[in-house]
Amino acid sequence: MIKLRMCNSLTVRHRLRWCIAFLLLLTVGVYFHESASAYTYAVYECEGGYGYRISKNEKVLIQQNFVPTREGYQAFEHKQQAKKAARLVIAKLKNKQTPALSSQEVDSILEK
Image (cartoon, rainbow, N blue to C red; front, side, top):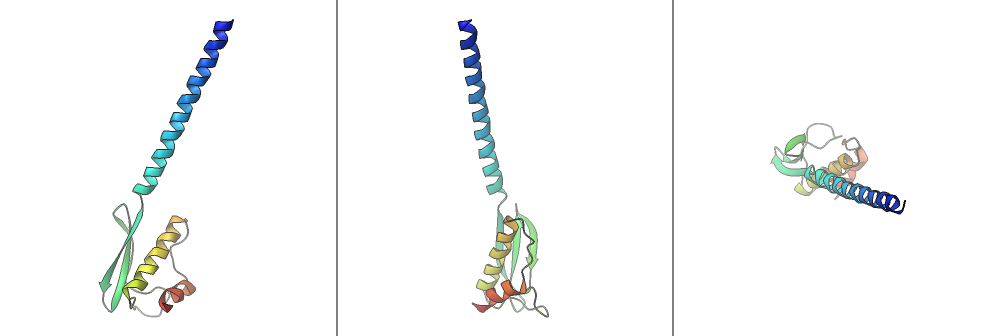
């Protein structure tokens, strides 16, 4: 009887250790998967100013040659504006939001 209890206790501990090890490996795997699939952006010169390109795992998702929500096809006047827009779009993508910028967001970017 005593040997049976010890055996069961050791088996439970052994299983618990394996479960903890598995959960740790799963957590590490998810962390590295997320960082491996990070969004990146590049700002480039285009006709009349600057645009930006957003990629994930080296695949281009968005290429924006002009200021969204504005009449006509006018590029960002300053490199820093295109950079801010790209960063905001990436933040939206990471938060599982629609990447489109609103008029208010564009106004805020263009003010500075």
